[in-house]
Image 1 (cartoon, one colour):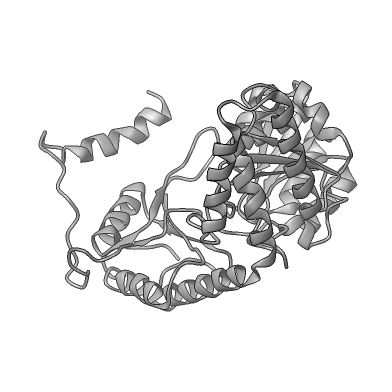
Image 2 (cartoon, one colour; image 1 turned 30 degrees about the vertical axis):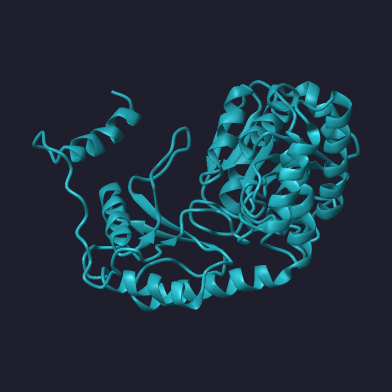
Length: 386
């Protein structure tokens, strides 16, 4: 039986309560608001609360209407190039290529830079698409302990130079990668450094340029990727390189970036409208950081082991996957919607689950209080490891 089947066995049994009957719903908390109340949604990644921004929506609708059906290949190329050049300037990159998603960007980059049999060093929490891309390229994957540069050095000393792949800000637990030290390791060992900025593009840096540019590492990180459906409200992916023309050549070296339909005109128009808003409306980043710090400190005061930091992703390790589901469901009954995370193949991971809260700039002070009240009512019900 595969590990996937093993992990599915418990929820399938739980679905029928182990007795062949339907699953019972979570208990309703007495302090939860009644019917008609608006739940606090912490499962989305619309970090800057741009999902319903009128200018972006109008631009996307205008792009769709202006195309009048399928746009010509030339018009599609011109629109894509204009947006890619604008994003390159925003990131401080020599070139940017666009594709359908962050997943496509990561798998494309790994297929382009990983030779068959070559070592690929991945942080144990690196996004699963980086792992998938490395394996699809035939690389010899090796994980190093999360954010542990000494462990990485030891593994490179044993395996030789290769590709290092990490997230700038990890979506599982909200931790930040030690990028300056990682760039040092890459330079010392002759490795290619790939950094996924999906969860920090738009949210970090004075103008939302991401952590690599905010730390002035543009010339030391070889390749950056990002999914734009987080801080930007449009689904697309990007690949940023420090060398001019690299992303154009990438189309011919990696199938995920070279094949498939181009971004449709409504997405191109929406992203073009979103970029100046992301860049110029710094109050959104300030609000995001303020609510993130407040919720994190409130949970720490209640005894939840969420760790330090100020990132918008707050993660709570639970004793088991069942605990994660139970806590998620009980919070949902109190009008706080969170995401339960479980170990995901092909990444190696310790057993257990996590509860993830994705903060966003649209949260009000009342929403924050409601979230903390919901957790306060549950803090004695489950054992949560610190």
